Image 1 (tube, rainbow, N blue to C red):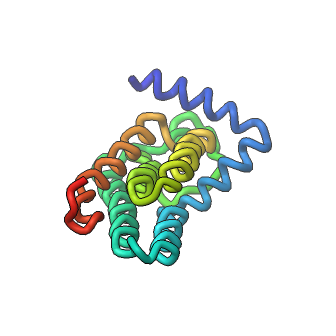
Image 2: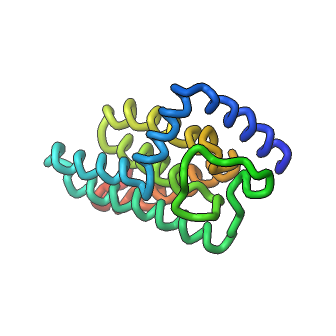
Image 3: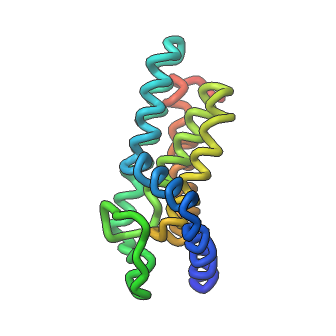
Length: 172
């Protein structure tokens, strides 16, 4: 698994040699820091969709919760970020030294599941941006593919476990 992780990461890092790809990956990494894009999107959803304001706010809370959960797991697992051993410089700075799981992926997947459940437009718009954000973390060289997969699974699971609460107690 470790060898596959490193080979996939290397292939995706190579994509970052294209200036346009690197610029887009850096931008996605920046707006996703601490779940900012997803938290802002949830608050916009709450402001615009008055009918489901409470569900949007609870979905935003679950998205933030997924991000916090990933940070907690990082403190336990303490996997070093890629490049630490190889001396490869990432394309962005990171808030922390640990890589597993990806907090960007956790909040992105949580937002995709939560906001996608709340409105059809969310189901069409959020997942492609969330997927691009997940890939960007490998392109900029700060996460292994397994970090991203674990973060995305944690984010999606967080929202699935909180779905009833998010929807105000209604079963879906």
